[in-house]
Image (cartoon, rainbow, N blue to C red; front, side, top):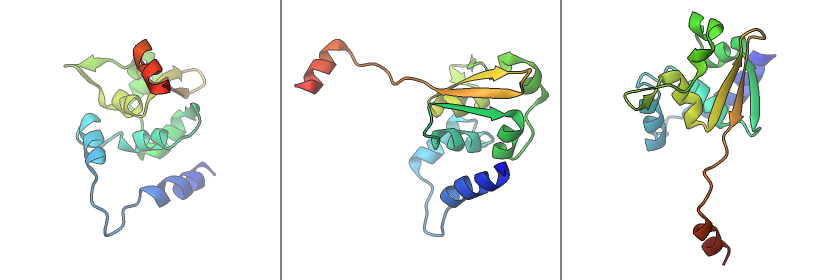
Length: 132
């Protein structure tokens, strides 16, 4: 059923038509996720979820990605941390961070909780100006 839902929901929206040109936003996301777009499908999936909390099993994540997760993803919680190298997030963490999510793995249950991060708060003076 998961594959049917994925095929029904994602592929219908994400399949480009002949007249579609790559958008600047899509190419920016692709560059931020490592240039190869390896984790772009995960970004798109999380970006299109309306729920603030999304829980996916490792198998479901692999279905979205189209390839197997590295063994470290299944055994080491640190793989899911938003570490940065040279000021840039790693490709896997960039996928959910750019979608406005955090990732909290449960290695025993083989699941990952992706939770929407709250938008940055405005400064006190900006709130008054916006409401006036």
